[in-house]
Image 1: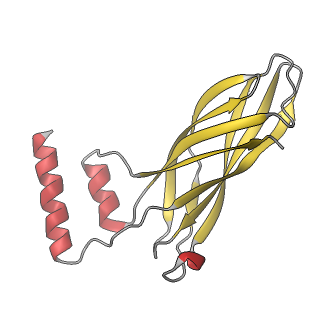
Image 2 (image 1 turned 60 degrees about the vertical axis):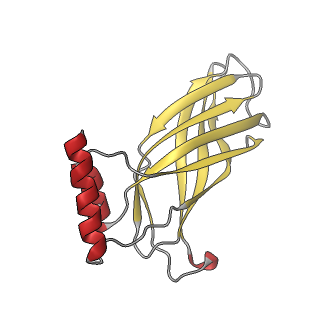
Image 3 (image 1 turned 45 degrees about the vertical axis):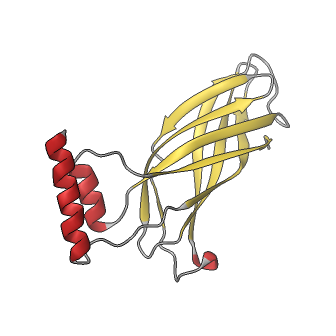
Length: 158
C-alpha cells in the first residue's frame, strides 16, 4: 500500500512538472426526475433521469453508479448500475459550453399494490467517471477509486 502511494505521488509530480496532466473539473449532475416505465399490481420498473454536464475539453466516460430511491408509502431501494454512457466534452470555457448527456438509471422493486404515479420521491447517489489521459492510467494501475460526482433530488414520479 505504501509503495503504491509513493508511486502514485511520484508519477503525479513527474507528469505535473512536464505538463502531462490536464486539470479535470468534476462534471455536474442534476436530477431531472423519476419516470414510471411499467407497473403491475406487485411491482414496478422506474428510471432515475440524471442530466450530466461536462465542462472539460475531453469526454468523460461514466464507469458506474450507486444510488438510493425512497418512495413515500413504498420504501427505500438501493441499486448499482453501469450507465454505459460518455459525457461529451464541453466546447469552450464557461457555464454555457458544457457537453451534456442524459443518463437513465434503472430500478425494479416490489410495490405491494401501491400506485407509483404521482408518488413523492427522494433520490441520491454518485456517478463515478473516468478522467482523461494519464490520470485514468494512474488511477487504474494503482487500483485507486475513480472520482465521482454526487446527485440528489426530490419530486413526484411521472
